[in-house]
Image (tube, rainbow, N blue to C red; front, side, top):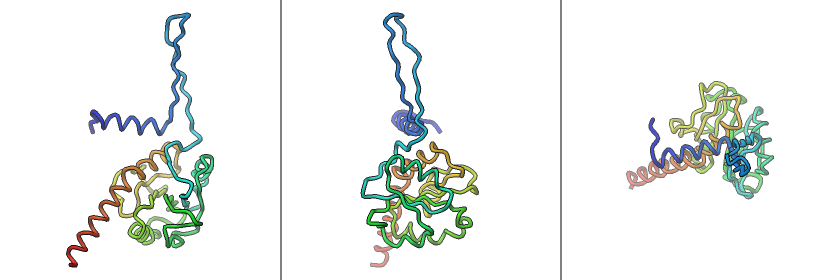
Length: 193
């Protein structure tokens, strides 16, 4: 794939948001030369997840403690749910559900959560869904699984993968899913009339 122009710049911005590098190049006037850049990696916080105070991120599964810790450090509202059937409205604990992160392996595999994921996807398409499983071959940020999720991550999940996945899911894949679902619903309304 070739990245040119704006696409290349967008890709670099996404990459930069994953690693969140802070660069400090100082001019040393005594030596008339630039000192080497000082690079500081901030690997303990999610920097690109923008969740409002009235929103909440739901975590389903036992092995999502690290993700929960990262979000709590950023003061993002999180809650653990025992199963996906608890999601019957867009609200949870008087907050709007913005994201759902599911540890698929906790429930026995994708086969055992597929029906609930489809129900949530169709009923609440604006909820960003991220699946985590050791059965995935790789982190998948494309749109092939939009019928059940916005992004799927292979466990164990690194902060970089989680942050990039949440960013892709929120800003690119979920809006595509919502648009597709809207077109499907409009087409079915047209054919019914």
